[in-house]
Length: 109
Length: 118
Image (cartoon, rainbow over all chains, first blue to last red; front, side, top):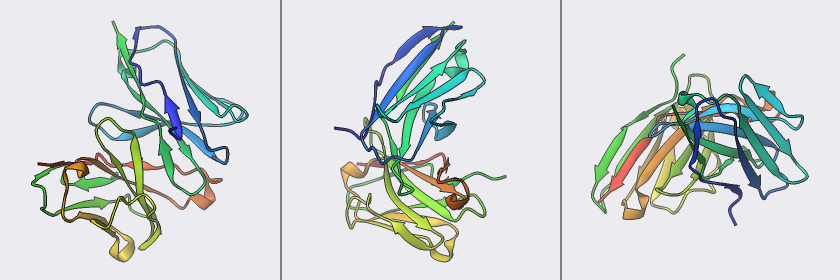
């Protein structure tokens, strides 16, 4: 079983749609959580950290459920520029990030 | 502020040859990491330097891989001899001292070095 599991997608949505991605992690000792975005043939870039209380950054909302070891990312009012791969990333506490395989999002006009 | 830079961006070598990848972290970042993405798989940790010391090298695949960070500035990752399964994208990342960030480890990645072993 992978340490971080994500649905690879692709998720095909029209502009303006709301889309949600989920992720589960296996290590209950994990300490910090992130969503990274990766464009094709580019490096991963931090989208947002995920906090236990949930957090929002513009159109993006992240949630963490420690009891269920589940992380989510909600994107509202999707833009064409949101098309990318979204990586769920977990820090297991040893300053070593564990990545999911990513969920691909395609936003169409 | 200059980001994390990696060189070369793409290297094509034959099986058995040697390749050295270089990473220049963001100035002032003590933490430097190497990660790798093999085609179809997730990005995986290779190792972590704190300044010039190897903090964690548990992800290094085998002894054909050698990472160095002399002087605590740039780092090199040498693969010798390269095998077909070493093909992939090697990412370098750096971060500041995490102890002041509540444990959160926010990394900035370089654009990666794509290695193709034929």
